[in-house]
Amino acid sequence: MKLKSVPLVFCLLAASVSALAAEGFSLAETPGKQLEVRFGDRPVVRFMHAYDPATKESLHDTYKPYLHVFDATGGKLITKGPGGQFTHHRGIFIGWNKITYNGKSYDRWHMTGGEQVHQKFLRQEAGPERATFTSLVHWNDAAKEAFIIEERTFTVRRAAGGTLIDFSAKLAAPRGDVKLDGDPEHAGVHFRPAGELDLQKTMYAFPAEKPDAKNDKDYPWVGGTFTIGDAAYSVVHMSHPKNPSGTRWSAYRNYGRFGAFPVAEIKQGGSFTFNYRFLITNGELPDGATISPLYAEFAGVSAPVTKITKVPAEAKTAAKPKDTKK
Image 1 (cartoon, rainbow, N blue to C red):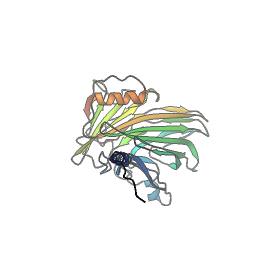
Image 2: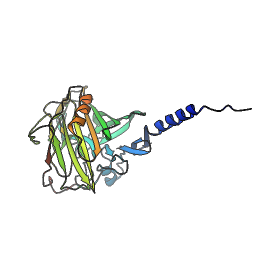
Image 3: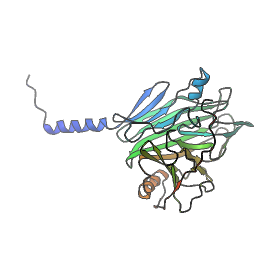
Image 4: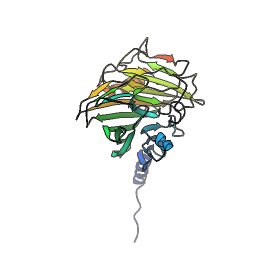
């Protein structure tokens, strides 16, 4: 049988569609360990969700899920994992060091007397424009019973030459009232860059002319720039206006950990959803004309371009690390 020739235009169209698909987002899971978001063949982020209580060492390394972030080329991780200075600082993570529940206090920042444990994925979707996944996480007490149940959602896109990550954490209190409290250094939603950064070059940026990082409240966003080897990387950490008012920011340590610290109360049977956005780029911090529309889209409000003030990080670290392996 004689085959008909396929018109060239259809061949080109098929090749174009194939190329687009190859450059879209995909999800690759290693069961019991991690879920990686890729764009084409390049890793973008990696959600670390292993939990292994078999030994003290394995429990230490897996007592909280967190999000690793790659540089824009997918060539290396630019976030920190277990060990090193302040071992509990890991990528993009969430926790409070003073949680009150049923008359007792719990620390789900340093993870003493209990863990945050990934249970399963409630959602996994990937396509040409974005990838989204939701992890069900139990915040357990010492008896390994969940007093907070979290639905942690990440949506990953490309924007401004880098990676745009929307972070949503719906925290529910099924067994009793919960108060989330602490201080800006040890509570909230934070970003921690890799431990190999140059401490002398860390900078922070604020959407204000005369920022007072330790006293100001309710910044719409805060930025940080850090250097690993010869390369600089920048992070813009945005807070949704529906997050609790009175939010303070920790954005001054030279090792680069920074984030938002809100206080919230959740009644038994109720829930509260925290929403943040991270813009992560190679190089120096994007300008206001780049940040403002991304914040406006995220927050659903008008966001005029504001003056950005950059401030060097504090010269000294907070303390000599004591918890490299705890």
